[in-house]
Image: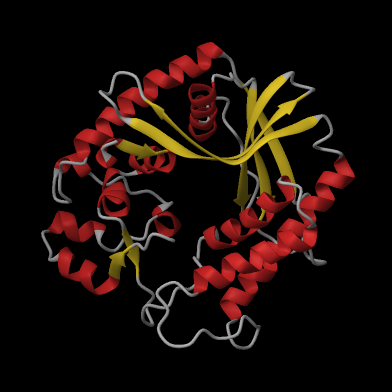
Length: 303
């Protein structure tokens, strides 16, 4: 399979959000260096906390104990903070590595609370797990061989909804609304359907708030918003995937200065894009490549 024909689920979303940010993130595969050197610090947008919690949830969903889940959280933090390390790795403690210690503790709290939420609410009663961290890929019709791929957090048979349900674990600052035609969930459901032949009847985001559960924190801390699925909806989504895939494949042949890779600035740029300072340089004709060379590096395989 030609690697240039493969499109990850998240790539569709980034391209829709901003073609220029997509270019630097996916075409160039760049990641920002820390200002103090090449040390990998926790992301400021909470994605590392979310990924650490995600590692713990994977253990719980596969039948592991809470102790094993919390160990998986810390293992994620230990592995990730060593990426592009310069010098010895400090102890994961409040004194020696406070940022990663804080991320680890918050993710552990989120995982502990998630298990309590499942037990207290009986949320997964009647839910039979079919797959956890299911890697899928499927050819997109009408694209001459383009393949969409990704990984689904949790798939199960829901006795209440009467069929297969595709769920995504999502860490959030505040609970988010889920549109009935949410692109991510529809893509995961389509990917499961086309790779297994099993048509899902629903999907949803299992949302975990990135907050501690101290006295100043107000519940609820967990939420689930389902969407209904049927064949007609997923066939329509397949057509949309085809159109968007063709746009991405065509855009891959352009450079940063091409008007095809226009920017789409909005208030989310401050937390959503690592290239917000580079973006105006592209339009103003400045030497942005030199700035990229000094402040960014090609992402390693384990990031």
